[in-house]
Length: 381
Ligand SMILES: Nc1ncnc2c1ncn2[C@@H]1O[C@H](COP(=O)(O)OP(=O)(O)OP(=O)(O)O)[C@@H](O)[C@H]1O
Ligand SMILES: [Mg+2]
Image 1 (cartoon, rainbow, N blue to C red):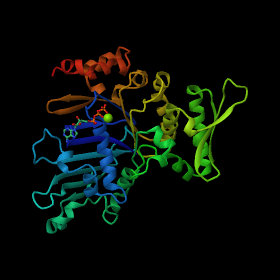
Image 2 (cartoon, rainbow, N blue to C red):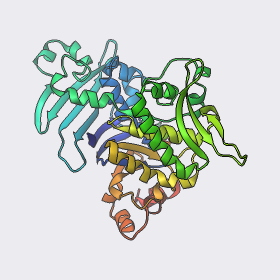
Image 3 (cartoon, rainbow, N blue to C red):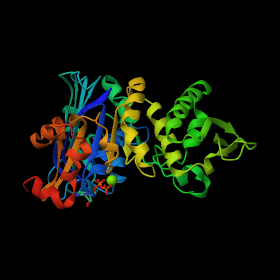
Image 4 (cartoon, helix red, strand yellow):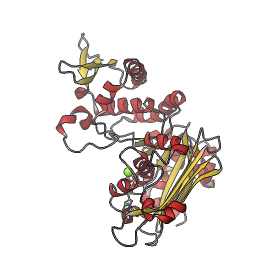
């Protein structure tokens, strides 16, 4: 399943967003235009749905509701999120889930639901507040999504959302997890527990994934051969590869000796194969050589054909966006303005469509419009 449409109202720096999403989505925009904030809308839903999560915790983890609510919205406005889930971008929604949230007027000023709605196909199967909510307002502090007893008729949505994965790998955390004690971050976005995750995966699946990674790495890190998983004398998991050097005998290296780019790429290629729900990637181009970055979009497509995993990524990289296989319908442009950031699918902008039809890549057709100097004038703002 994929998220085929996203509708936001007053979410962070967006007053209003309504976009159709494809299997691959590229978020493009200047610094502080809201790319990470947009990804955070999906993480927020995951945090509501997951075990030990819930509406109260998802909001508390982000501060309070006024921090989430768009600063340019009126103070009493609701924060609203709606998603449509479909088998593919060509198919009609199988599910729709929508919530509106506000803050209690007095007391603890907890976040409370203004509404929670679920549609199975086009049939409205949950419509809160219902009679019970009207009798007991406390109930509106929790979504039905987060409650096993209440979400049984739409459990599939909860399972999908719970499995959303966000990745922003920090190589040093992966290499030296024990040097960074402190609270574990749920979902391990920075890769601290990446090797443990590898260890938990069954042997057959792990070998098959590592083989695919090895062959994808073949072109980009040619000296790296035979990528494998091992456990050391203490039972600690490691990645190991044979490195061909100028010396006649090839040497073995472990992940603490891999380059930052190699590690990021391995983790990225692993994540693409690890799960079927939405994968959110922050700037996958970081620490990678331009030649590799220019191949990321086709590599993602190739692995997606096998896993059907939707990928939404933020990027600043002209190299990544230079791939002519990226269509205008796959690109969301974030255009900051005085009333918040506007989000547009690139192919819906006539001037961009013409450039793309004229043979320009997304990098050439779209990136100049996100350049802070030219963005405002080129959008007539
Ligand atoms: N509730 C809110 N209302 C309005 N703006 C907000 C709100 N919360 C955060 N912001 C603004 O959002 C901006 C940060 O957005 P975000 O981190 O998503 O940008 P980005 O596009 O990911 O940038 P970068 O490319 O630098 O990573 C900041 O300028 C911040 O002030
Ligand atoms: Mg960001």
